[in-house]
Length: 275
Image (cartoon, rainbow, N blue to C red; front, side, top):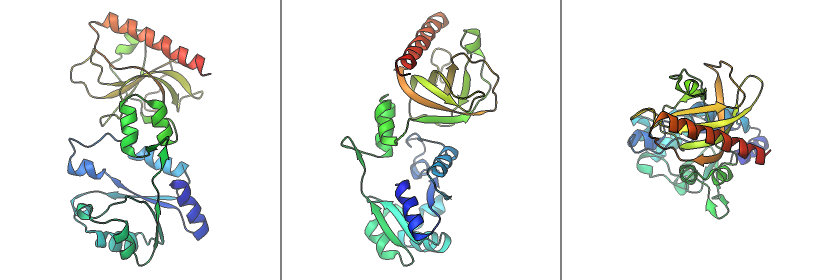
């Protein structure tokens, strides 16, 4: 979709731009049942830029925007504020108060721009959608998630101080606190970017660490092979390549440490097999 946007922008001699909403409308209407985000806003902006988008407009989704009817959205947002000349949407696009606006209404209301609808994209017979990506990640099917996304799934964040427990167990980790429920959980073979000296391989845990804490907050922890630099405050990216197992509670710390040793060995084996 972004490729088509950039192509059209070049043909029309217009800057390619994206309009996105934050928070997600489902987070606004039902925050307790909203689906996990697939990326942070900052990561999303970086991805848009990488695909050639010149400008991203971030609309704050609040009560005022939610109450805007479909006609006013076209007139006030798309035409007056953004001065849209060409618009690309999915064929099932809905907008406006109560999701009353559809593709036909959009085309009927548009007076200063033309509308192109993109057909549904399928991968191996599966409709590409954020829901399908979330389902694949929740099931631990990283190859399917990567096929749907067009890239491996990643989590980006800033390294924070942890409780240093991993270091006492012989597995010093870099810690990325997660503000929201992650789209996946478990133990994974990962490649980590943003480090001194280039990317590193390792094993990562995403979840609530049930053996360490009850009712803990979600966190991503990565043990990097042959790496022990101090990188607090550095922004890094975890690229998820292979799921090793589910997160689980162990009877004691010794049992956890033994499993961590097996996890590290399994991750090394994965990288050796996919060198």
